Image (cartoon, rainbow, N blue to C red; front, top):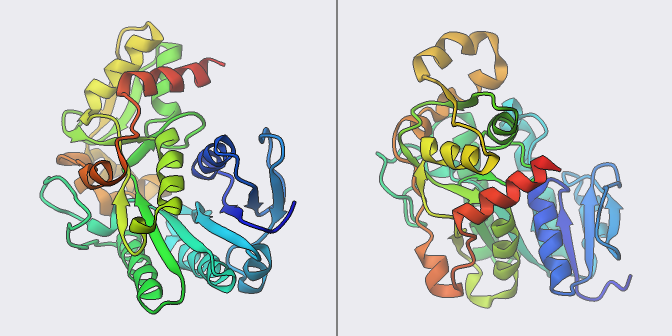
Length: 311
């Protein structure tokens, strides 16, 4: 593959794959970077490179000749975000800077922290608290400093909790597989609070658009998401699609607190209780007004995700 105008994607998880799929639709040459140098079920013509995102010498080599670099990586261990995540971003940033490529970064909403249940916009103050929220906040500040200094052109797309084919998330197997089996869906916190969920395919579309458009640079953008409903309503829609009566088991925060000392995965979410017990609404109007609404209707997104789990 020629190095001219290659789109380099770091990360073979659901986010990285959604970006790859969108780039292929647009006829772009793609280099997918994975730790192992392997990835299954890729579209024809995709170049796969073995790389360590935290190794700046390695990322400079991998990003040579790139037009756009997409950072779709995550720390291996959720409990070790502060140690593992920043070096990944730093390495990818250096790779993009060395090649003069644009850098598109996938972010979540942790940097905002508690916000009283008000809809989050890109102007919401960065009040993240706790190890993962403050790590995400500092990583965000580092990105914009790199852009302001002229080191690299940066833009980012921010998504709420996501769902879709192959997603490892709270709205993944614990809900869709449970619905197909007729078992209760397991959710955390208050299921009757409004909560935005972002569809994975829309993330890929949005990140590629951000990499194409000059006006996206130097700013964060909330990725268009299906309409916001309560978690209970979301689960009920999943069970309707599965053809099964809705069943839901919610773990309240007092129980989370009780069991968290014994379960590391549960303990790690304690700093994010506010997401579970108050409205968690992401406003994506600025993206829509600038680039158009690329969100998939909620019913269609749930149907497509259910088709994946059925298969």
